[in-house]
Length: 74
Image (cartoon, rainbow, N blue to C red; front, side, top):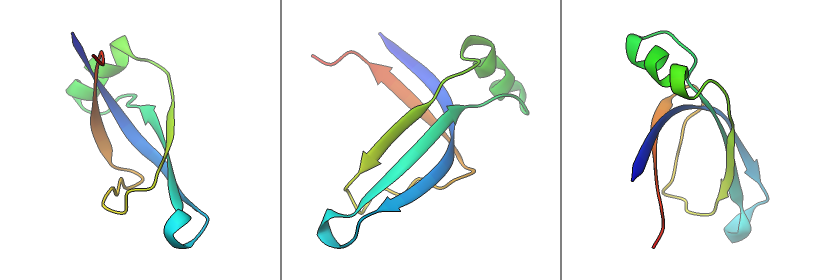
């Protein structure tokens, strides 16, 4: 089973420097606006996702909205 969530990137914070630098991201569920956002909000009215990433190719932008697909790991 896969669950699709729709979250907005709220912040992007650089932690450290050099090859050990991490970028920390914070996401929250969409709350309204478009009919699709309202539909997602109906089932996920609150929450938060925080994670740090070392991959320089990953670049989520604050203010942009992303789908998060969650499925069980084998």
